[in-house]
Image 1: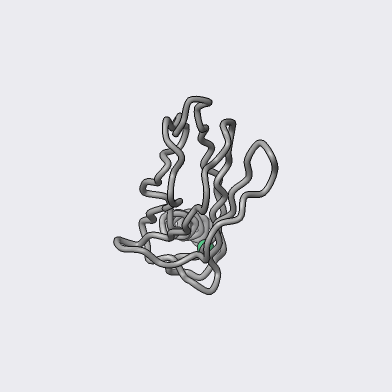
Image 2: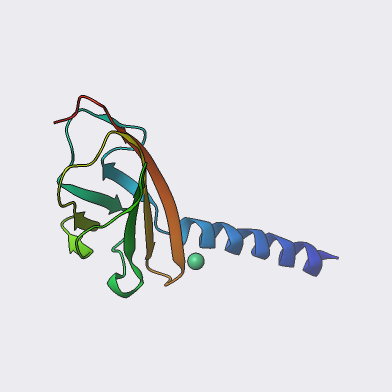
Length: 120
Ligand SMILES: [Cu+2]
């Protein structure tokens, strides 16, 4: 009985460790939910751990579908960055990121934002 309880306690403790081991988004530009008044020149996402380049990607989808981004590069302070060429049309966008942190597991997330019709 004691063994069983101990095993459960260990399992819970380990599960907790795994969850906390994953990287997370620290901040982004554009910020999540931002309404931009000017067309951005790049997309950048900062993480809590160093993103693993080989498993990384940034994709942008807008009102007219996929938007081509420049090659994804690692930026300062544990970030991924990709350039935006040209001006983004007004509308709703979703930036999707994919990367892996210290434990090598691939994680993904979405950052929605919008570009105002009056954006320059
Ligand atoms: Cu993991």
